[in-house]
Length: 163
Image (cartoon, rainbow, N blue to C red; front, top):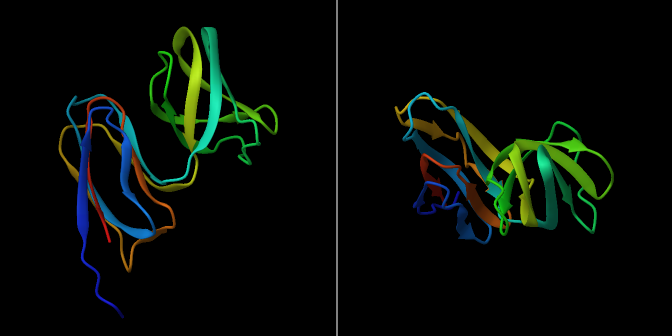
């Protein structure tokens, strides 16, 4: 077996982004919540996003449209990175409404724009209190063919380990 160095990447407070671009393995993470008592989820995804648009017409239902189709099923968990408009980046459970559309429940908003959908989930961590959680992945880690995207909502910090 070949030895590889383990590297790290730190992200916090809605500053989601690619921890690494290229084939690697997710080895583990340390996650902390800076707002104790407020539950939050953080996602570590394959760095491959579906591009789409969204519309929230003054309700709590956000409709996402992915022109080439999404291939997802109702109940799937995704990280949505809203790249324009005022919707909130976060982990969402989806309801499929068509081959190119699905919905998620958001806060009441009137907004629309562009969204990146990260649907190839490597690992999701739920955290409520402010005590950091250390997640160690056994064996050689989880293969991420396209790199690792770290999706963090507000009040969350994470250090991801890969290599």
